[in-house]
Image 1 (cartoon, rainbow, N blue to C red):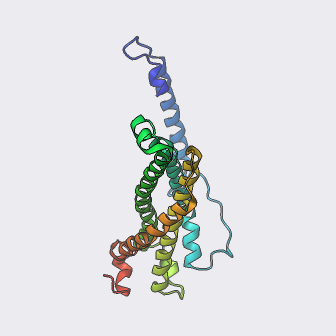
Image 2 (image 1 turned 90 degrees about the vertical axis):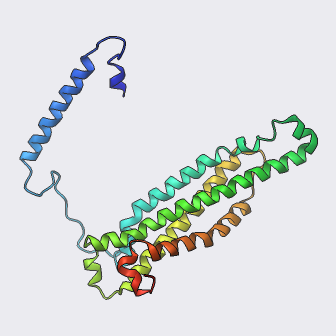
Image 3 (image 1 turned 60 degrees about the vertical axis):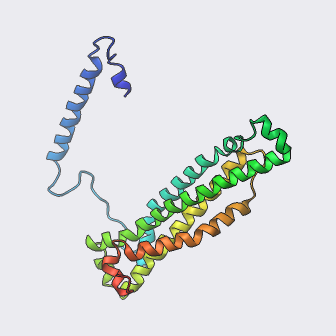
Length: 244
């Protein structure tokens, strides 16, 4: 974008940035061709180093799933925590919707205005709880969908040769997805509370967020169980439990 601005569009014709982009493209193309010529058939440019032959951590499907999903799970938790913090940063603006009216201040008084401000913020937290629950369900459901994807692509062939049953494999994915969704929801509510209280003159107690978490927990588990029964992973494993 900065290079396009330097072309001075609608001002004057400055062809230097265009020429630099063209030279850069030619040089990059030449490097790519040279690397491709020296590359062996079906081999990568960077040689893959051999890993450890045996890992004490990878002892079954559960630890394998955790190891494969650790980065995505961490990204979901951090991303949702940032989202919760961004919503919490506007709590002060929501509470001031009634503070700027002199009529409301005169009628309700300082204590009434404070109570009304608190109720407005709590109503907003209730709406956020629904939004966060839906997003947490999506994060957990993506893990369950990996079961069908990995089975279809043949990634679980070595796992299926072990003594573990398909019941255990399905239960592992479902439990991991549910636990991940619960952690995402709680982490998001906590970051919302921390950032929101930093903007409010009268902070909200943690019990309101805990109540929201407990209230949304059955909904989250219901959605996750419904997703487990009707999603793509059900095509291979749902008949074992009579879901499909």
